[in-house]
Image 1 (cartoon, rainbow, N blue to C red):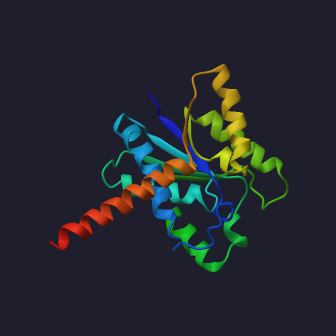
Image 2: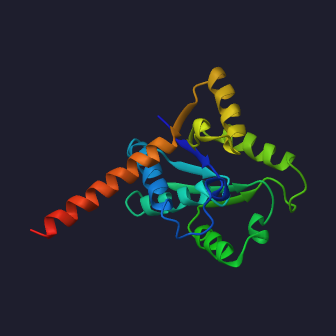
Image 3: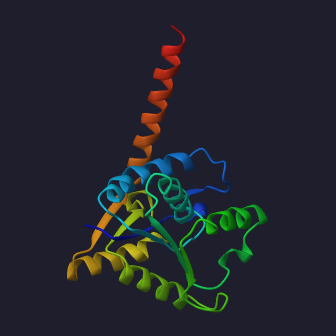
Length: 193
């Protein structure tokens, strides 16, 4: 049984998403929720995330929504360095701060601003050490991206110990989108009778 789950994946720009109103975000969140909900029902206690703009924060939104039904579920953001949002546009900073209000634990690996890539390595190593599994929104077939590095580390960890890797691919997200569209068509069809 998973107690602590790390969720991460693509950064928003890697998905060509440049704003919170992008039509793909609700489908990504639904795909995450469909994998996460059964784990929470089975006793998942903590969701950990690096808190980067993209899948990480969308997953945080999913967890904050699930906490309404499962109040014992806890959310943690552990960043690579202090104040990662300082370089973001104002609307993204506000979004980030609104999510921070709902987290149960927030920390930074390095007590300094960005210095170098070693901060990301240290963060990923800690997150993997503190988790029993990884839910990764990543699709190698669709093209490489930043999630590749954590996936490589998770696969190595899985070889040496009991570590679960749950994938959400672009195909999974597409399936959610098609299901939603089908439901919309069915709803529309019923109301016209």
